[in-house]
Image 1 (cartoon, rainbow, N blue to C red):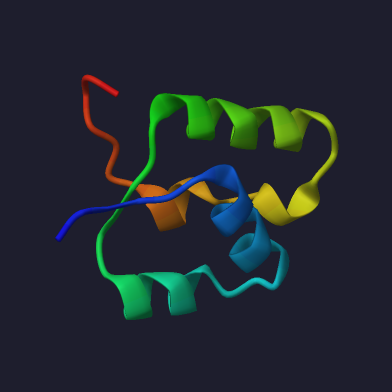
Image 2: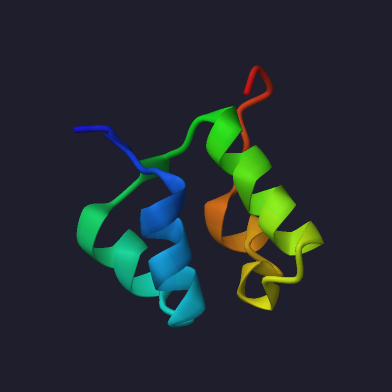
Length: 64
């Protein structure tokens, strides 16, 4: 079953530096482009726990 996550879920696991746990327990995750944009806004605002998150959430779908 496909799981769609929002920015709150990603933020909580990212701030604890445990995105690996989220992936291991839920499996493949999908996030809308709007969630990715919120993550990018968080990086711009200085939320450093988002740094390197692309390696955890890729591969990206070419169509968003």
